[in-house]
Length: 346
Ligand code: 13P
Image: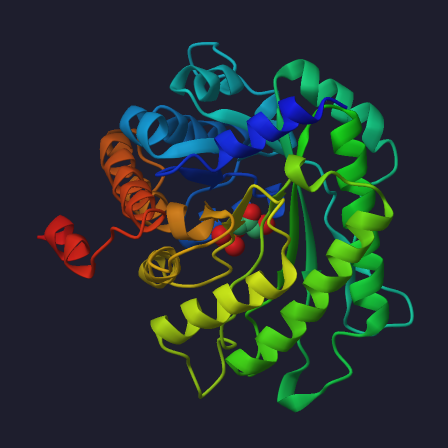
């Protein structure tokens, strides 16, 4: 492992004013997104859609530092035969790859999940590096019990998922690939912001303890956490200021300053909420790490709708993607304002 190379890539992933496009939906997840816009999910439609995003030259060159690809995408070629990964590289963004293989039921813990994919990971990483990937992603999923059920998450679920995240991160660094460490505490449920804070604190503390045990170099990784936010079904939603203040407090308590950057997931927040929260956090002075976005839904919902699977809508899809990327770029510098959204709509 060459730590200065890893650190250089990690810092580039959180270049001020830029963030990460998470375009690594599994075939099952992208099918759900395409169902919503009434587009059949085929190898070709998935290719056309992602090609549209990667050819959005303004968004990709000005606002996007890196793209997380799915295994199918990293081997796919554009309509004209150019490998899709070359489109990403040509825009100046860094290609990355999702390497986890999804979740399975966790034995003895009803309703909880463990992320799998460590078997043969070292060999897969080698192939991805040769293809051009310089960072990777692994997502652990932690649920919060409904109706005040404090048995979820269990100690078992937080422990095994933190262990797997650290195993993955150590393997990535050995393969010269920067790991995005993503322990996602889900927004599903009726919990309030303080319960989310408490669970995320537990999850982050477990994750960093495992990263230390497994000798992962913090300077050569990126953290991708959820924000401290109320569950979608909670009657007690927190304000933008409260989410920002609590998320920053939580991260300061749990994330060492040696970590170069934190790139949030959007997790089902509305597009504008995800932007507003990131913006409010970046107005806080004296943060020890760079804070940016690594959004899937909050960057792609608008372009998916504008595109709707039609070749004649490609320009509209690219405009919608560029707008969201620009809004989040401003938020990553604390320079976003809500009226910029209205101006676009007008
Ligand atoms: P969302 O922003 O849609 O949560 O996706 C980010 C991601 O990569 C989840 O693993």
